[in-house]
Amino acid sequence: MAQNIELTNKLMEIGLSKIETSVYLAMLSLGETTVMKISHASGVKRSTIYPIIENLRNLGLVTIKNKGFKKVYVAENPTRLATIINRKQEDLLSILPALKSMYSLEGKDILIKTYEGVDAMKSVYDELLTELRNHDEYLVIGDPERWDLHAKDYFKGFIKKRLKIDLEVRLLLSNSQTAEDYLRFQDNFKEKVRILPKNYIIDSNVIITKNKIIMHQLDNVAVTIVIESRSVISLQKNLFEMLWNFCEK
Image (tube, rainbow, N blue to C red; front, side, top):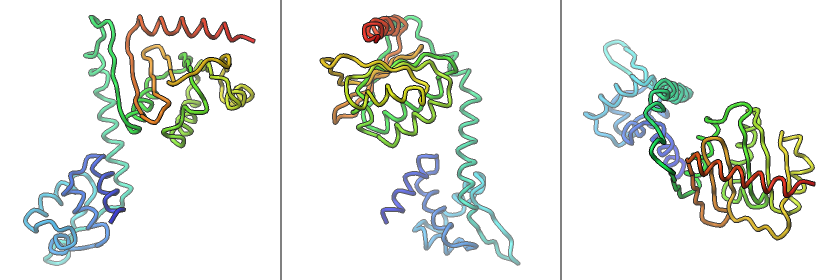
């Protein structure tokens, strides 16, 4: 039951309705089947099944076959779901330039967005990866012993993805054994690392890029703040440089 709930939620996240999900999951387990059997397995009324199957067929998730004088219905291999996701991504990318041309910070001194929860935090970092380009600066002030407190596995994957982009990465880290490890292995991760004095306590991870500043809290409440402001980014970069030079060994 728990697995079905999870599958339903994930399928709805990629765009299927709840009733489409119920029908599709039922069909996956039935093989070649009839509307009556689909209705019984899914709990969806028979009269409602036909338009749902047609929607799923248009998405490429269902095939309709003629067997004699009867029609049978077959769920396609679930790998077809990846096609749906790719198609949605391609559609989004095709209109992204137009959307960006409509989006402007002109007239706004500062734009601040606040997100709550681990999933929202992940979305902020995923979006950042799509914006970064080769040779962009990527400046970090953080506590490496706590910065992945909310999502350790996610940030391991994030670093791997970040390494695929040729960034100018510099890390200013609070003083700890973990920070010393980062310093020792900085070349392995294409980073430059410096360590803050022991009395510097950091309670938020801060990332500074050319277009935004991202801060996420390092306590038990996952709150992420995104700041988009040329003047604030410039100020934060200057402060970073001051600390970076102060920590030079």
